Length: 326
Image (cartoon, rainbow, N blue to C red):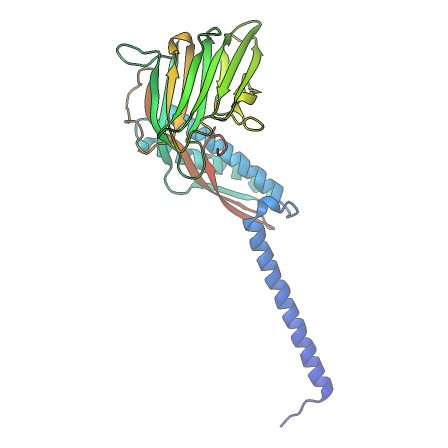
């Protein structure tokens, strides 16, 4: 029987220790790689992480534009809407990959499951903001029982008003988010004048406070992004969060109605998308104005970014124009 002397035993122990050390280092690299993949946003020191996150933002923005276009032009059926957005995601994926493949980067973006549907309410011609009934009303219900989905998001997005005529002070156009079940209201009042040396005034009343912003304009129309919190592209503190939180429908509870008041005092067009469980009936012809049609409220994109040093995978929720959680 062969026997090991002390030197042989020492060499075997040393070799075993080195093998264990190499194994531990390898495991550490694998674990760290997984952490970088899942938490890339907080791992700025990872090689290529900034490029991966920048490309993620580009993919999100481009798919968002695809949703906007689909809601505007492909509202005939949910099938047509989904097909349009899937094609948009494929186009974004192909174009971004072509741009990056020369640098050894692979980018892929696909829809993960079916979109979440809602309703688009819009007036596309330039007219008074009255109801579309046979006898138009200046005070009317735009949408009933808009329900937040339970994740804190607002359930109304991309609410934009373009006004060619504004009411004077004392006869303001009013948008109200009426909380149901006895909950308080959120109210926005708009007045002013357009054109050279014009001014747009926006006042927001929430259950806790009131704030007003005014913006000077020279254009022949006033552009008010209600959910985006801007007037003529400039921040309107009355519609934003901060010391005063005036974000649309903030503080009115999980369910609310949207109403217009004094719609005969303002002229122009508008559009908004709401997330609800009973989308509007689908149409296959151009609707009258104002109208409501089925729309995509949001969708989820599976995003993957590969280089020789980094693999990043994430699911991106895309809801263009959605305000922050309230």
